[in-house]
Image (tube, rainbow, N blue to C red; front, side, top):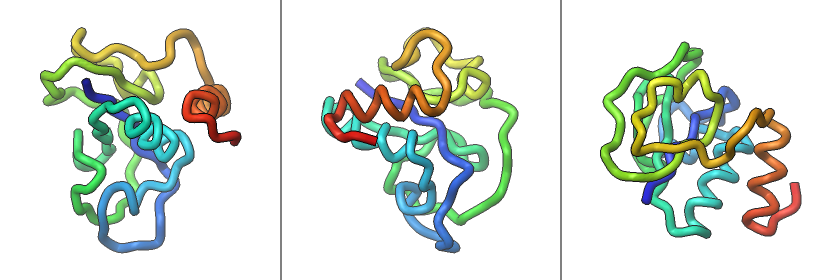
Amino acid sequence: MILVIQCSQLKSNLEKGAAREIYKGQVLLLGLRFADRWNLEPYILSGKYGIIKPDDVIENYDLKSPGYDGPWPTEVGYWLGGKKYFKNAPSNLQPLITGHRGYGDMKNWLGKCINEPI
C-alpha cells in the first residue's frame, strides 16, 4: 500500500536535493515516518513536480498549487494533507485521517501513531 503526502511550503535552504531534504513541514516529515513505521510506500504530492518519491532529486521552488489533477498512482493506499489538494484523487486512494482535521490535529495524530510526542 502507498501513502501520498502533501508537500510543505516550509523548505530547506538547499537549491537542489532529495525531496525529503527539501520539504521541511512537520506533517510531511511525520507522514514519512508514519509510512516507514506502518510499511507504506511513501510518495509526495509536490506543487511543482506532481507525485514524486521522497528520494527523487528536485530543485527548490516557491509555488502554491491550487490542487492536483493527475496522473495519480494506480496502487491502493491513502493520502495525507489538505482536502483541496486531493479533491480529484481516485477511489483507490482514501484519506488517512477522516473528518475535518487542521494542521495541528494532523501533527498530533501522527505523533501518537508513531509514538513520538510533538
